Length: 564
Image (cartoon, rainbow, N blue to C red):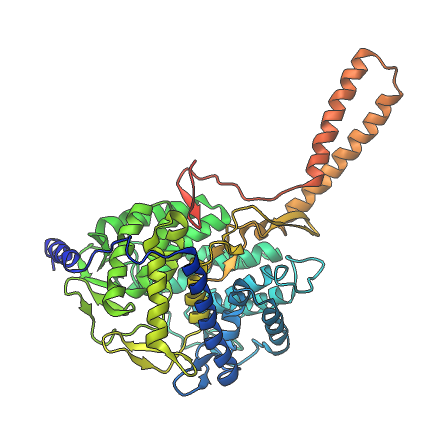
């Protein structure tokens, strides 16, 4: 199928699909408060039914009112929903769940677990909860955030994943047995996202614990993918982690690839890493050159750039939100509107959507209550204030409640055409979909803090600032406070020790100067020393370890664009 035909079809589709009038259905502040309450009620309907009918299993089966293990028998929904509890204001239940996890959570089990899913849901969820512990009113370790029970659990879970990274290329296997490591018969083929979606969680672990191994293996995996890209700058969908050969050569921004690009951008922001941002920008050029048509993105052959699938996948709906983080607001809004038209066509996003035909794809008609379009709406609303984005949130609440709500929770939609339901409620519904909806309608939530308030925390390595905002969400919507990565650095402790020596030196010297005759020269010398003392006093009072913004490229956090 040539590019001319694609462009013509897309042009026809843009005429057929209705344009949105931003003046219709204006959402007021009172409406936003009403929708916040409705989203909160949706959370508790799902969460309480999980506790009543499914715990300690991973997930709720809402049509039969029971539970099932899906990703490793971790009581996964409990971990995934933990930080959402705090975001909607329930400190009491947050505290109760932390106590339950401390008593019950065990990773020494003979279970084959997805390396990718365990990282983003379990490690990410525990890390986020750990960094939010002070806000939640938990009793803190004296060394927090450099120590604590939730951090210990995150480290234990992550260590169970490390054997997967023991490959020729540094790119990890897709599955690991939590008790025995990688099975000798395990396939070496895994998806791109399963290789490149670790740097946020693993770098945070390394910076908090002082153990560099986690960040080292995550960076090596990123490097392995980067060095395996094609000559035209694209990566495929599945790769052999032992040989670096591409097994599936479809290139795009959706399923199997998506969070690799997401982690390059968010990793760059979290770690202030210019190399990661440069890698993404290079990929972005190739993506625009070969996969973008009329503000849609299709799938192409990674070596030739020829169109292989003129398909929009629901997982691609994260892309406008990611574009907003690099300051590309115009392109983000245009693509978002394309995706929103699909939502309005079906009351949800089908897993696959044939762009030229304007229809679902056989056996890919479902909507498992995914968050990606709502996620993009939240980022873009923060950046633009465009009321259309609130209307997507409103439509999502109305659709999900009308179509998916059942007596025992919310059921995935098996087919968006007739709204038949499936007997599953994935943990990401509480971790992501509900969370992003709530944050969209709650502009004053602490997550949206832009530095107006913060906590000054004293650690064994010095003072640091926490809770000032700029949270970086992992791909399961678990927020990481970037300032925390600067709290546990031994370099900070050494800096304080040097400052103490400098203060002591000037104090001794000033005492000697006082004993000298009070000549004009000595007066000047005393004034100089007084200035130095004042400087060191100011440093002692508030030694802040806030990350800088060294890039010339545009970055933003929650829509706040930084220009060099």
